[in-house]
Length: 335
Ligand code: NAI
Image 1 (cartoon, rainbow, N blue to C red):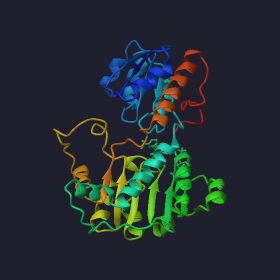
Image 2: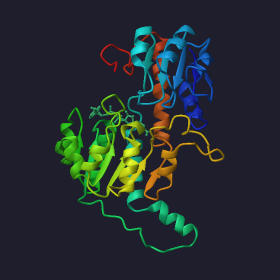
Image 3: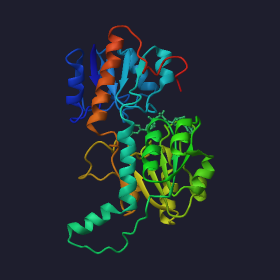
């Protein structure tokens, strides 16, 4: 199958080539998919895209006109794809539903430990041989309450890890996972109760109409003073302005974020010589109690191997006219 791989990054190409073993004709391009760049798909059967690509209504219509039949996502999240349009126009879309929940959960824990124990500020001081310990006080995680919003694959691993630290776990999800209740004493609550009781809140819900700006001014008001908020889900699950306000008035003690509401066009490339004209990002970046990573929670060898293998598997299925269980455009799976 002829496949154009949008937004391909140097670090992932070897993994994709290894998984492909020459079966498909892969063309790697750096441009991200948009209605403007969709033209690059002319002459290809399939495209592969990542979370920063935009497969909206217009783009998918163009892809269909250009003869593209398949979209293989190299991500778990699919909030950037209009599945409804794809289904209507007969394009098949598949994702990589579970590539390494550990990669993301462990990154969430890394952010938590770093902001709680102020590792970045401490290290910045040490670089200048300043070993002063003032303002570096954190707290023990043992016996603290962690609120996990979204107890799916990643939230479940997060629950297990935080249970290992000796934390009490609260969960909020539309579907309850009884195994987490029995094994790790997770207690499901309402969102409001979780926010009111948790010392640490970690977000693991997908971005959809119900979760868009879920963490807003009203919920932040319910939170404990000094709460630590960790977001490795999607930027728009939080209302960034409300969170900045919460940081300013010290309601939120620290924020660790791997994703950002307006990350499109900014994350995944070097802007050091051309700082983005984005007051929210600048305001967040300026605060010592905010740690931002550029959407790289997935960046482990294991995750990259699994993403590449599942992407090629989805293409293999389509090439041999079989269904893939990862298809999102099947009836019933469409959002
Ligand atoms: P999952 O589908 O296994 O779990 C998501 C959970 O959220 C499910 O249990 C679902 O019932 C729950 N949920 C959905 N809508 C809800 C709502 N309105 N209210 C309460 N709960 C709701 O997904 P998984 O694999 O755990 O991934 C979660 C998200 O993490 C992905 O959708 C993606 O956006 C993000 N992610 C981020 C990555 C990164 O590199 N930062 C990498 C991979 C995923």
